[in-house]
Image (cartoon, rainbow, N blue to C red; front, side, top):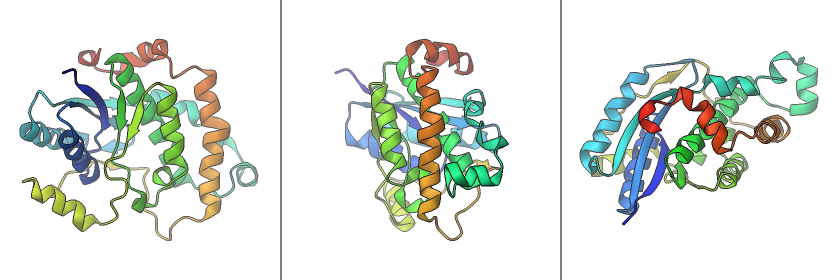
Length: 244
């Protein structure tokens, strides 16, 4: 029986932690490549290894491995322009209510998806997965962007799986981890650019995120042919040799 290989974005938090458990329990055919991404503004990344080891110890080395931390800054910079040099009135005209916090999350998560796709290409994996939850209210995890990321993954010949997407209760998430014998705590790295949602997001913010992805990010991905195996090999200089 050949394994169904999955590249899982493991942040070190409880959402991706539970996602790993659910994937491994969904089918004995699933094999996880767990990987953590560093945007260059994150500290505490070494702590994720402990979470990965807890997963491997429970489900076995024949079901999962941890690929370590991969820096995404080389791709992240592709999407800085034109936002960084635009005046507020220009930003408002083209990208509506796009806020700096949502912008940073958008280009960061897109870069994570690209690296996940490249790792999948280099390792014959058919699935990409992450611990996104709609209840978190960041636009990158709401309907609209999730569909866009799913299409991006499909255009590379893979499928996106979101095991905890509909989970809207942290207490239930923690109960699920406890029921599997885990202490429902994890030392999640801290992104210095991240900022909590304080009053939710309105439609202008959502429209702005979608507009930046549609007008800037996706055309650049296609123009530079970033979803090809050749580019996977090119950017593999940033990927540990054991993944090749």
